[in-house]
Image (tube, rainbow, N blue to C red; front, side, top):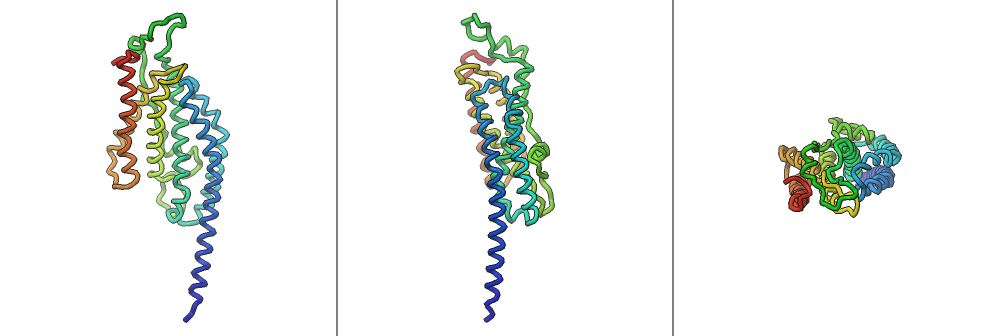
Length: 258
């Protein structure tokens, strides 16, 4: 019996292990910059809406370093079959897409808040609850903006969903997973924006409510299989319910128009 076949198998196993280890190392190189961005963006839950645009400059350096690390990963990974190793970096790339979506939403929301004014401002010498019902007559609520797949790919420095079996790219499923993570985060923000000790904000939850309901309607248009993505899409209704409860509570307290 020729046992050389086992030697060849071992060589293949060693090469496979080396490739996987190299990709894992490059993927781990992205994580510190990703955590840095997340640590800054997490402050949004205790930051007044008019300061949201500052997150663009506060995360600029970390986003650039993250982009360079992802491009290094892409350069190495593109030399091998994409879907053979995609599971190694998929979660990291999803998180990178999520922080991009969240950063962009915060900047857009902050600019909208500044442009249309705060609904919860009142004279400093007044002890009377804010008459937000009257202010709402002059306030245009914008549902927010969702950064496109192409926009996220541009920020991350990778290609979008492509047909080539080797080219490193952000898949459509990874993007959709990131959008759902954004919905999860915004449902938390809706609650935290009204319970801050100072600078409580009653307009942002309304815009979040409009925004995530539009996203939910979009996801309901998709015919998804019974997989992980479908399960997460089904969970969106709980985030919508959480935000609706915030709006309902504000309405009962007379803080917004019913």
